[in-house]
Length: 236
Image 1 (cartoon, one colour):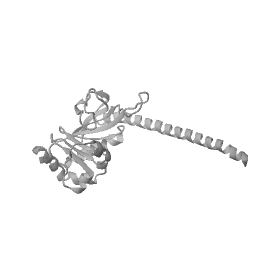
Image 2 (cartoon, helix red, strand yellow; image 1 turned 60 degrees about the vertical axis):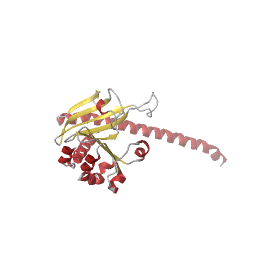
Image 3 (tube, one colour; image 1 turned 120 degrees about the vertical axis):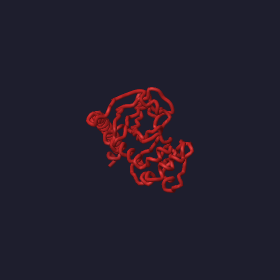
């Protein structure tokens, strides 16, 4: 019994060390598998674009500089990097999508810093409209976004979304027909924000661009535009 008691710390230490090595191996294995899947997805993006007659560039700089100051881009910048930059027509509308990469001060030390990824989708609107952001309410927005929002007087909608706009009349007309109830019931509206600027409608998410998301996000943007009546654009 005494020998067992003396051996117990060594057994516990062995279990802890073995468990630590197992955890490191599991995490590393999952990371490698995820990297392989991401790489395969990038190859598929190029293949899909070619098959559908779209234009694809693996990497480009400067093309998205004009979006500086808009979400999810920096306040200012030159030669911003866009990867897997793809343009074409989807459901009769001109579009572009790409993966925006940037380095964040919070992304680690210089030795192991990894770029932050935002996958961005943009569809051409029927008209210029007005600047409008429809943002899902969350704690970060409440803490850091001090811009004045525009309540629309619909309790269910105002409870779930923040609307930022420079033209309240246009925004109310755009939302009050079929768009507001659609956003309240569409699952994608729970996960992504919307932004209208200079005749383009944006949505985005954090993470790498994947083939599975391209049609989903482009369809979502088209569905949103389909629910804004034509006369709203001409009145803007």
